[in-house]
Image 1: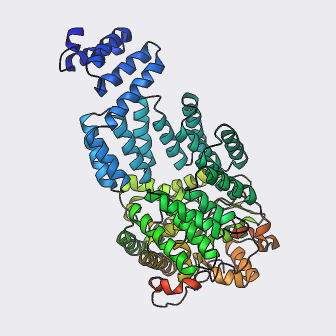
Image 2 (image 1 turned 90 degrees about the horizontal axis):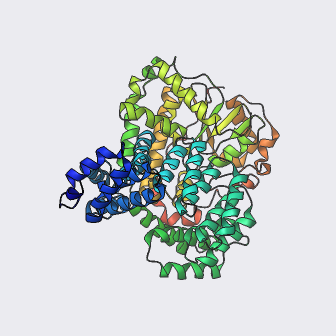
Image 3 (image 1 turned 180 degrees about the vertical axis):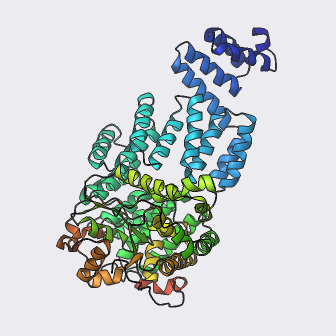
Length: 595
């Protein structure tokens, strides 16, 4: 075996060593060490040697060899090309290369992890989990795979499993930035804000010069309404890194008094020194907000436009795909099909879905509802898109993939939704609000699996809502918001879908105008509660007195009394917003099904 290991082709020696790993790992390790000495970049030999060393209780050296194999594979031209395509958003090309790499070496951990990340981003958590568990079977101590698997488990709503994985990762790599960041973020995501704050405070005690950590802490403090402390955290981050756009943007939301010309000059100076396009996006948004507050609307719009131009290049959006999906949904969800499936689903009145465009007033509506003693607000839940992805993973495209679902399937999906939300509940209140805006695309699916759930469509003036989206930094998703024409098209597609639901399921959706709500809160709140089947409660007219965490961009607005302050925000920008104004059409005024 030793002679074979010194040849130019280690294949025979490798095969012989592989046979020994399970029965005599010590001898296998000796042979494999000779192969690795001769062929230091031979990834299969490195991985097999790591496995043999684990068999003789040398896990530390084994972990180093696994990492060496991963690093070696990641340096190869094919994988580097895949990563370049991934970074540029060319995900199909990245996937094709990664699959070719894996076809040549089925144990390439780097390729497995890249495919898993692509699956995670495509909302295919089952596939992502399978790939990552395979990677961890091959490299049990690979921290990046542990962290990514934790993110997948969190994506599936299993925060407990995610946190357990991260605890294991941090036990082996206590200084790993990715594991620490994920541990902090998922703790907060789980709704355990006191624990999340304590973890951040502990981490900052050890890493007080970490600007990103201070910034994330600032956003957490903003979520729980500790505005002054959030501003301090953002300022602490900027004292370390004056060019951190996310910190400036967070500060622009919580600073009292608002950012001034000195702050604008500091941001412009940092922006001029930046060579990183991604880093400049939140800085442009922060400058847009600061200049808007100072009444300099032309300069403000220039920065909003610059931010969106860059973001659009980083997050491509396929407007035709959205329109096509709506066309197909309109054709698929006929009255006959919906009647035929009407015996399925789970008969629970607990869920309240608030849908519509982002920045339409949905956070205010949730805050109003969560101020009722019978309602718990759960913010933006990913459960419905997850269920749709689960169905499509087995049955194809949406909505056509739903055709094969039986009544029992629909009932099981409804029960799965209820179990998932129950795991995140903090109270025993009988109703709960799920306010993920893009659930508008899945209203018919929601009706099929939860036929007694309440669905509320919150609407806002198209130009006002469109501009508010254009001026909002969305780090991921919402690609339509980066272009005014795409925004107008997306709003049209959303309204086409809702209009169709009103035709085939009249009265199923309760419509609420943001402008009407702030003009006459009591009348609109009474109608809203009636649509759900709840008695009026005066606390719903004082949502600002509800101190629940609000993890959305509207955190500051919902902590103020109901008012018109943001209604006319787009007016000074009207000259630049013509693309948001399609031909006028009547507003939908379909009655609630409970009337």
